[in-house]
Image (cartoon, rainbow, N blue to C red; front, side, top):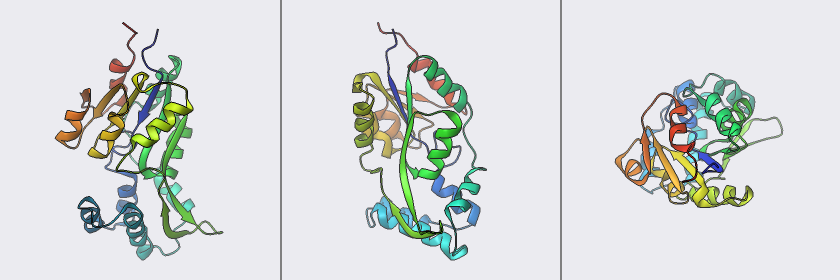
Length: 218
């Protein structure tokens, strides 16, 4: 009998082979958000303002940047290896896979549809009637407590924290770890994330987490 029913994946730095889906757009448009990132990390601005500033940077380069532009950019976003194998293997074992990310929902949707994730939640970008970004974002994932979203998925799929796995790479994922029976720090970016996780995996292939998930009940 399987030990786990649900696996919650962070997206940025776990399913993507870059720091974040936000940074990918920064790279494409050749803008730098380090000042806003520092202000956010120091608690000087909140998430909606952080999103507003990032989108504002894009619009300085491309004032009419649209939803379709972002979708096109995300098609070239570098991904970690083994996503297809991992999701398919979990599905074959009756385990649900979802994405819980403070990244951009268009990227999460793309990954969910391409690789067969059962669900996703990420931050949304507001657009006008023509699909052009308004400059505002909608926060669906609180980076201070991604555990909220994990608990919602646990309830939605009728399982328990003990039968749920979370996979993340940074300090914003620690509250996911606290809400699941097993947690994996995948290529962790800091010592705090590594110390908070049950296991640490350093790899260029996400399928390496399967060794810890596909275990039978004792």
